[in-house]
Length: 418
Image: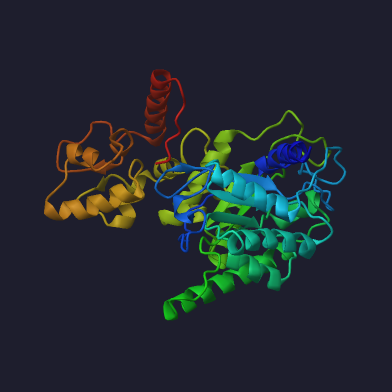
C-alpha cells in the first residue's frame, strides 16, 4: 500500500516538474570519495553535459501545494488539481533507490510553497543534507531556491547542492506584477545577490585553502517564461544581460509559455509560443555570452523581435553587409567570430592554423567551417565564390533554400545555430 502511495505521488509531482527546464549539470566537479554513492562528474539526466553526453535525472517537486496564485502556474492555489507532497525521507529514499538501480545520476528538486519561503526551503536543504551526510551521495544535486528564503538557509543550501537557481519567472517586473501580484521581484533578487557574493567568496577561499568547502560549484541559474506576457525579444534579452552582468549567472533558461490554464490575463488557450522562438532566444543568448555580441546588435528599437526564419548571427550579418567580405587570413578573432558558419572552436582553429600559411576553402571545411553559410561573407587564398557579393535578401533566400533542401533530404528541420 505504501509503495502505491509513493508511486501516485511520484506520478503527480514528476508531471508537475516538467515545466521547469533549467536543469543542466555543467560546471560541477564534486568527486566521489570514501566509497560514497554517485559522482557529479558523470552528469545528470535529462540534460547534457559540457561534452554533449545525455544523462539521467530524478526531476520532481517536493509538493505541488502552493500559497501563491500565479496565473501561469498549473500548481496555483486556485487550480482544481490533485495535490501531493513528499516527506523529506521519501525524497531521500527515492533518490538512493533510483540511483542504485542505475535509473538516475542526480536530483533536480523544486517545490511549491507550503507555508512560507523558509518552511519550504528548510525541507529542500534537509533533503540535500541527508543525501550528502547520511548516504555519502556525491551525485549532482540541483535545488530550486525559494524566493524570500533567509540567508542562513541559502548558505546551507550552497554547501550541499551543486547548483542553485531562483526562477525570475517573468522577464520584467511589470509582467510579474500582472500575472503574480502576490510575488515580489526583490524577494528573487536578494537570494541571487547573496549567492553571487558567497560563490565569489568561496572561490577565493579555495585558492588559499585547498580543503575549503565547496559552495554551489556549478553556480546559479534562472528561468523566464516567454509569451505569457507581451515582452519583446529585446526586453527579454536585456533582462537576461542584466542578470548575467550583475549576478554572474551560469545560464538563463527560456521556457515558452504552455497554455494549460484559462485566465483573462493570459494568452488564449489555443495560443502557444512557437518552439523556434525559444530556439532563437537561446542562440541570441549564446552570441551574448561567447561571441562578444551586445544586445542592441542582435535586437533594437527598430527590430525588437528576432527573425524566426534565420538565426540571429546570420540576421546580424545580413543587416551589416558593409562589414563583409572578411579576409579569413587577416581578420582578428573577434571579427572571425561574427562570420555566419564559424563557431568558437573553428574560429580559434583558424587563428592557430593560419600561422603556418594561408588557408583555402578546403582547409576551412576541414576546420569545421560551414562553407554553405560562410561563403557569402569571407575571402580566402583560393578562388572566391561567385555569389559572395549578393544582396542580403538574396543571401537569405539562398540559405533558406538550402535549409529547405536539407529538410526534404533528412525529413526533419534543423535550425543551424551558427
